[in-house]
Amino acid sequence: MNYDINIFAPQYEELNVQIENIIMRMGYEYSECPEEIISVTNQLFRESRFHVQLKAGFRIIEPREFAASKKEMVIGDLTFLIDRMISAHLKKVDTIAIFVCSLGKEYDKWIRSFYDGNDGLNAYIADIIGSETVEAAADWIEEYIRKASEAEGCHITNRLSPGYCNWHVSEQKKLFSLLPESFCGVALTESALMTPIKSVSGIIGIGAETKKLDYQCHICSIDHCYMKRKSTVKK
Amino acid sequence: MNSILDQLSECIEFGKADINSKHPPHLIGKEGASELTKTALESGIDANIILNQALMTGMQRIGDKFSRGKAFIPNLLISAKAMNAAMKHLKPYFDRGEASLKGTIVVGTVSGDLHDIGKNIVKMVMEGNGWKVVDLGVDVKPEKFVEAAEQNPGCIVGLSALLTTTMLNMEGVVKALKQNSDKIKIFVGGAPLSHEFAMKIGAEAYFPEPYGLVKYLSSNN
Image 1: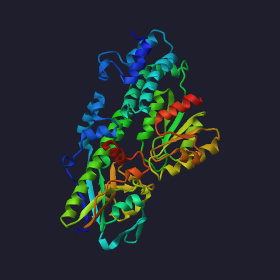
Image 2: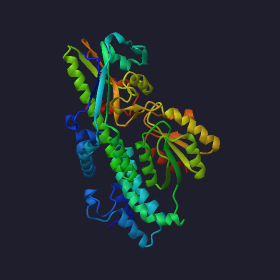
Image 3: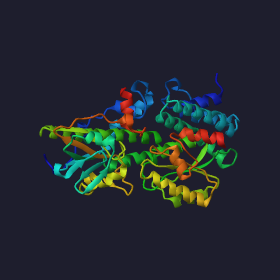
Image 4: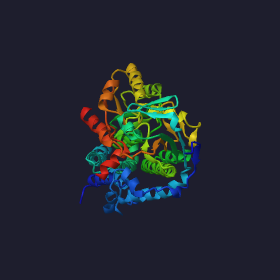
C-alpha cells in the first residue's frame, strides 16, 4: 500500500457529471422540470467546466496507526468521536484513506458573480452544478482508491464525511491536521467550513475483509442530506 | 378575457418577466409582468392594488405550490425575477410614499459561515412578498446585526446558518439584538436547525423553508 500523499488534477472530462443528477438535486424529476430551467441549466453546465480547477488527493494511514470501536476512531494520537452510523462501516477495515476534492476558488467566484449581478436563478443553478461536480470528483477519487486497494487484495467502504452520519463537522479539523497545509488548495475556517466552498473531504475504509455497506440513512436524522434524498428516490 | 390584474398574477406565478421571456410556454409572445404593470399604472390602477391583488397573489400561488412539493426553488426564483421586473415600475410610488411595503427584514448568515444560498432565497421570496430586505451578507458579526436593527426601526431579523458549528453563533446574535431591543422578532433558518433549537436560543420561530416565514408573518401582523 502506498502511504504517500497523493494529489491529482483530473481532467473535467474524467468526471461523470450528469445533467439528470443536477436537475434531481434541484428537486425535479427530469421529465417534469420546466423547459426554461433545463435550458438555463444546460447553458450553465456547459460553461461551468471553464471555472473548475479540479484538485483531488488522499493519504492512506498506516494500519498500525489506526483503530476503530463503536464510539471512537483513533489515528495516531488523535481520537475521533463517531457513533454507530460510522462505526458500522468501519467494522472490518484495516485502515482508512483521508481524501479531499475541490473545484477551486474560481468556481466560488463564478457563483458570486451571479449574485453580484442580482441573478439569483443562475447563482442557484451554478451552485447546484458545483455541488454535483464536486461529488463527481469525490466519486473519481473513490474509484481511484478502490482500484489501488483491489490491486493489494483489499476492498473499500463508502465515503464518510464529517458533518454527515452523526459525525460532527468540527472533527474535520482533526482530519485536516493529518494532511499537509492547504491540501488540494482547501483551508478550514474557525467553524470547520472548507474554503473553497465547493470542496468535499472525508474518509474511506480499506481492508481485506471490508464490505461496502449502504449508508444508514434510515436511522439518520439529517433530512436535508443529499444521500438520504437519493436513497428515498431509489425506493 | 382575464383582467389585467389576473394576467399579472399569472405572470408572477409562472415567472413571465417580460414579453421576451421564453417561459412559460403558454405565455410565449404575450406581455409579461413588466409591460402589464406599466399598463396597469397608466390606466390608473393604484400601486397598492397592483402589489396586493396581483403581484402578491401570484407569489402566494407559487408559494403554495412550493409548500405542497409541486414547485421547487428555481420556480420561486423565476417568479421572483418576474416580481422584480414589475416592482421596478412600482418603485417610484414606494419612494414617494404613495404605496407601502409590509415592513423591513434584516437578513444575514451568522459569523463563521459563508453559505449564502438559503439566505438569498429568503431574500428573494421576502422581496417578492412585499418586504424591504436589508441583506448583510455572510459571516456577519452580532454587532453588525445590532447596527442594522438600529438603522431600521421596527424591522424583523432573519438569521441563517448551514453548519452545526455556526448555528451555535446564532445564540450570541439573538442575545445582542434582544439586549438592544427586547421586542425585536428574530427568525432563524438553515438545514441543521430545528424548532427546539430556535426556542432554546430565544428566537421567535424556525422555518425550514421561506414560505413558512411569509405565512407566519401574514397571520401574525
